[in-house]
Image (tube, rainbow, N blue to C red):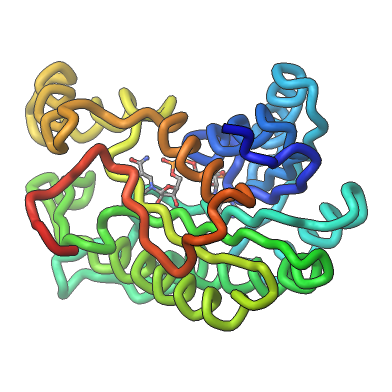
Length: 277
Ligand SMILES: NC(=O)c1ccc[n+]([C@@H]2O[C@H](COP(=O)([O-])OP(=O)(O)OC[C@H]3O[C@@H](n4cnc5c(N)ncnc54)[C@H](OP(=O)(O)O)[C@@H]3O)[C@@H](O)[C@H]2O)c1
């Protein structure tokens, strides 16, 4: 299937590594000119350069912190200046799992606010900045990368709480983005703009082994045990690769996905046993 993405312009926040870098790569392979942003300049510039070299398609790596409104506006302005507009906005920046952990009496408001500011406000501000460009073109795709914690409450082992502590902001920040996508879909649909949320589950990125080693050490388990336990958590019985999440995003970013808007698409390999979600 020709995704008809050739020549389009995308902005991917948190594009320097992990799922964001995989999305930037997949779009670039389809002929999209991709602008990547992240806080660490050396990493984002390196990734942008590596993708351009691999695909032969122009990229731009920019330093930005999406918790700062000025950074988000600047990145969109720079993207438009360099490539003439923005057709696709993938809001992916965020710390996997979030940072607002319990137990309840230890949840720090500042961490909850930081998670909400990164994902929810980062996405809202990005949408506000890209939509004028999309309206002018009569086409736009807004995609919020959230996570399965929107559907399930969860507890993680961490340095502070080796036994595992409930997560009080990973889910709420993701749900907020899902709600935002639905609202945007209604406000912008008649302008040719769709908005959808993609929910990765446990996803293989370059940081996976380090994360499993860290959590395994807290739980007294080897990395092999951690790999085995975590890979049996979904229907397909293995970790989903970041490139497989990126394939779903590439389709949603394309003109081919016009019938899908305001939806929540899980790319988790079938995690969870519930029938209705
Ligand atoms: N991996 C998973 O299993 C999984 C599962 C469900 C959902 N997700 C979601 O998918 C997204 C990507 O996760 P990942 O695993 O690929 O994470 P990752 O490898 O840690 O990459 C996160 C990216 O976001 C950037 N970033 C973080 N905070 C930022 C900020 N305030 N402003 C700008 N950029 C920022 C990071 O670069 P800098 O640090 O340099 O800014 C990096 O480029 C996250 O939103 C995460 O919640 C991941």
